[in-house]
Image 1 (cartoon, rainbow, N blue to C red):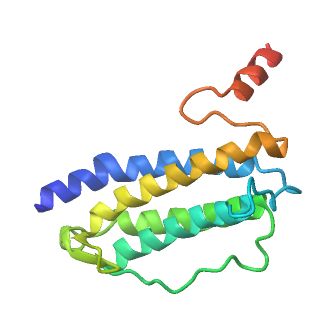
Image 2: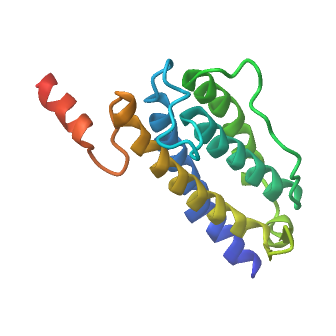
Image 3: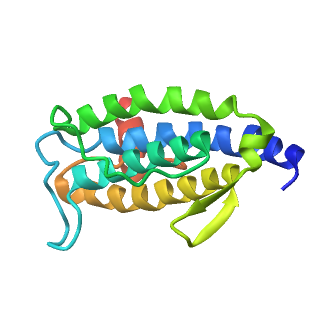
Length: 172
């Protein structure tokens, strides 16, 4: 990857994409009722809070890896004080922006450095931002289908949801 390609991907594609998707992910996590975080659609599924934590912790892991030029696979357990969806959103908001800022300041050498991911991929650091975007979108989709069975409303994601349209019509 050429330096100008890495800079283009970072500034024109990945940073705007991450910022946009982070807001959408926050909306879905905020929609989890604080008393329903243990909901899971099946016994083999993660609970709503486990899935929400998986999304946000993985984003931090990938942002850290891009900035550091290597992955740290030390487990990231949910802190004891993060007990509800509101707590996860607050943690996410506090941790996302500083990491995104650090990534935005990386040199082209750092962005193009080849980084190993578990021996499966050896790619330029900047390309892992695409991985984490897809990962978050995938799991956010899973989480959004938990909402109605929990008795929650599905927020708009890439356009109005049934629930957001009903709320808009009721407000008119």
